[in-house]
Every structure is written in structure tokens, then in C-alpha cells.
Image 1 (spheres, rainbow, N blue to C red):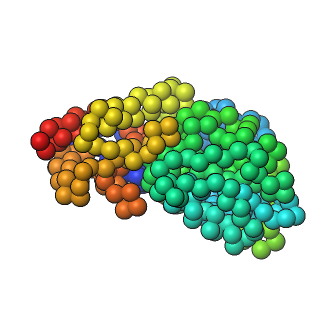
Image 2: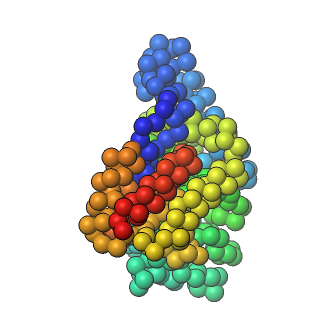
Length: 363
Ligand SMILES: *Cc1c(COP(=O)(O)O)cnc(C)c1O
């Protein structure tokens, strides 16, 4: 399958070509059964093999310790903005949680959490339009906090935590929707990590939650059973009909990731891809990177042009050249290139060449 278009959309985002090809085959005739993969019962032995395979690949790729559970939850990433507090707030009697605020999704998550407990915003970069990651250190965590929360990669602002904060005994919860499995992570230092699937894992609408098992079973009384992690844990995420297509697709993406050499290899590739674009930005006086250089994301590269007319012309011409969905989020403006795991380096190189040519044409 040759690609005419590189999709730089922030999410739903591009999937690897071999994954799409496999989906196309299985769509009409899954494993020779004569039915589509989306017609397959979630209670069938064939689907059981699909979900077990996905679990095993995640465990292997992420080097997940035994005492961590994998849940596939309904409602995308933002359902977990409620899911995290509903499940973790009850860990301590104060019903308090500490958040670092580093962007739009980060703000939405702490607003949602405030419905279920007292929220302390220990650090924030709102004053500089979230162009950086503010310090978030152990001394900022109240003793009676049930959990600490960060957004590892800020999709709109193009920033990321280079290293995760040390939160001591307080469980660290991470929204990793836009950088899960893009780099190596020591899960033993994390309480919970969740990600909506549509950026690095598969289709939209379902999230994957990786959670340390001792954090399951403390949900607040009012928690809907389909948000309670215990419900998912007890039923292998099948208390009701699971999104079979999402889990199936994610399994293919995990196999693809393994075929690429795993997470360490994809991290190297992601670093190289981002460098191709940041090099153009840094060598140019025409483009301006919007993220502080120490906190730049390797998943979302954000930059501006001298004025709105130039940005509009850039986006139009880029689209005509097969470089799709580069418009920056309205909170930042300019251009955002989302270059998740599935984006090949050739896509970044083509964009870099286009950027240089466009700059020359503006003299
Ligand atoms: C995209 C994104 C979300 C929103 O995901 P939904 O599945 O639409 O709820 C949340 N957090 C981060 C960091 C994201 O990038």
C-alpha cells in the first residue's frame, strides 16, 4: 500500500499501513470463519484469543510488572478524567488529589476531578500559555493526597515531561493519551497510566488503563459500575459488550510495534523524526517553535509563521502536496505536526523539505 498522503492529524491519527491492510482482510473474512471481525461475539473463543494476545503483547512490550492490570474502558480518554478520581480519591480519607496543570486536557481533568474531591493545583504553566512543563516535586505533594496527576504529553501545546516526577508513596496517575508506548517507561514507578486509543494505539472511543492492582477496589460509593476499575478487572473488561474492533486493532498495532523492534526502537525513531522538524525550526528565522526547547514533545511539533496570511498559505500548499491536517489548535495557532509512532520518518522529511521550500518562496 503506497501512501499518497501523510496524515499529521492529532487524533484520530494515522495507523501503520500493514495494520490497515490486515483489517481490510479480516473485515470480510476473519480467520477463514466467513464472518467479519466486527461480527464476532465478544464471548467467542476467537475473540478471547484476540484480547489475550493484545494483553500479552502489551505486557511484553511495556515490560509490565505482574502486579499491574490492563483494562479496556469505554468512553475514550476523557471518561478517565472522572474515572481516575472516582477510583482513586477514596484511597485516603481527606479525598484530596494534587495536579500539575500543563495544558487544555490537563485543565479539563482537574476540573472534572474537582467534582469528586478537593483538588490542589501544585504547579501550572497557564501564565505562559502552557509553553513549558512547570516543576512538580515531591515537596508539593500534601501528605493526605490520595494521588498525584500529570499529563505526560500535551498534545495541543507540543510539550512533554522529559522525566516523570518522583511522587514518593503517593500513586502517580498519568494521562499518556498522546505519547503512550512512544518511549520507554518504568511502570513500577507509576500507579496508573491511561490513554485514549486514537493517537498511538487504535480507534477512538476506547481507552486502555494500566493500573497497579492494589489501587483497584477503592471506588467511591457513587461510582457507576462501568467506571469502576474493579468491574473491568473482574470481567476481563467484558462486564458488557467490549469494543471488539478497538481491542482487535490495538492488538495489530502492538504486533506492528513489536515488529519495529519494540518501544526502545520506536523511541529512537521518534527522537529522530522530531529532530528532522525541530532542526528546520531552529535553523530558520521564519518559523518559531512555540514550546520551550527543554520541554519539546516528540509527538506533536508546534510552530508559528510570521502572520496569519502566511500560515493560511502554508496550510493550503501543504495540503496540495499531500501533507494533511497540519493546522495548529486554535489556542496556539500556526502549525502542529502530530508524528505519532505510525508516522514514518519519510513523512517528517517530506514536511521538512516543504517547510524549507515554503520559506524560500516567501522572500
Ligand atoms: C486527545 C487527548 C485526550 C482526549 O481524548 P478523548 O478520547 O477524545 O477523550 C485527552 N488527553 C490527552 C492528553 C489527549 O491528547
